Amino acid sequence: MIASLSTALDQRLLVLTPTTRDAGITSSVLGSAGVPTFVCRSFSELLEELDGGAAALLVAEEVATSKSGALADILAHQPRWSDLPVLVLTRPGADSPETAEALRTLGNVTLLERPLRVATLVSAVKTAVRARERQYQIRGYLAEQERVEQRLRSADRRKDEFLATLGHELRNPLASIMAAVELLRLTNMTDPSALKASAVVERQVNHLVRLVDDLLEVSRITRGIIDVRKEVVDLKEILKAAIDTSRAVLDSSEHRLIVDIPDVAMRVSGDPIRLAQVFANLLNNAAKYTNTGGTVTLTARRERSTAVVSVRDDGIGIEPALLSSVFDMFMQVDRSARRTQGGLGIGLTLVRSLVTMHGGTVYARSDGSGRGSEFVVRLPLVSAETVENQQAASPKPLPPRKILVVDDNEDAAESLGALLTALGARVQTAHDGREALDAVDEFTPDVVLLDIGMPGMDGYEVSRRIRTKFSSDQVTLIALTGWGQDEDRRRSRAAGFDHHLVKPPDLEKLRELIR
Image (tube, rainbow, N blue to C red; front, side):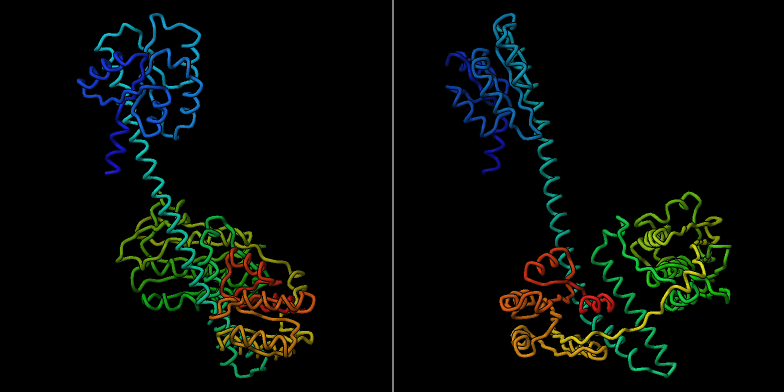
């Protein structure tokens, strides 16, 4: 009912003439021609009715010129889709200064000289009404566009909330696993199998941590904002790690993997996790686009000061016209379910971004459909002097500190506590907010590692209560949480935290803050 009433108001012509008789005649003529009209008795009534909606205005020159300022002000504040037609009934000639001013200020004006033929009046009014109908179509399009944008913003907000929650839930077990791995490294294991298994777990957990980070900030891929932590690494070890990561994909398709890597060191400056991700993505890509039982070849060689790595397959190949676009976001060469194993089409985009960030290049080549493809990565090698200057990383003891670890996940709290104890700290753990507050009073810690997402009293409230008794000079509060969005960091600062780390924490960063 309300919508239909609004539509009826939008379609009417508002009429204001000097005399009621003129208005009545005009309304009768236009009504007979199928144009709904509303006769206004005064200018104030015209403005009031205009606020309800109108297809056009038909006013006498006397009204338009004497009230042009007020009417112009109303028309100046129309919605962006609107350009209300104004038809002005003028005296013969229509050349007065007042008429010129009305033309200048009122915008979409049509002058109709009196005396006026009925056909001319009807034609001019219908033309104005049709123009107004096109404006309404634009209004509808813009309204629908706004609704779509609102739905997209809502979906984007729900996506961010989902990813933040997912990241939090994934980071809790990863923190426990990482702390346990670090603790195992401190036990001086000698069994080669245990050492190898520990290294595999550490490598894969690091890889999962990075994937969670990427999941939480997918936009970093498109903006090229991806964190890399460079160190001098042997490319041979990177390639072995990539093979380990991709082995399941290769074996599931019964592919034969040929590896040709020289026995000489090829050291590059790079992030070992990110570089392994590059070559694992290329191996996975080769496996996906090669029919069952195919061959994938991984080779590496030195070319003066450059390491050159090639991943070649005998799969479906790439058409020449597509070679320049295979690294584009969401690009997939062939979406056939028979030939591919799915994917989002971001793997090669990430490869290009990461290789570029390491100062290298990557390109694809193929002889065409059915003739396989090859991806070649070139990375700069580091000098022998750089290798000699790099210190081997090893766990360093902590200065004597009393540290309270608070986490409702008991595995996470106990494993991190055991690790910090092994590094020389005095540690106590707590598993809820009330227990944490009691421990702060009794244990008087130097540092509190405090989870945020705890049931009951959350970490924000615990931090606020601690800050009512102790300043940052007395107790350092470090948020250690799975929540890592900008809003989470802002809230932790407002609650009194000194630092904000996401799980699992970087051990060197944590050691630095504890010091």
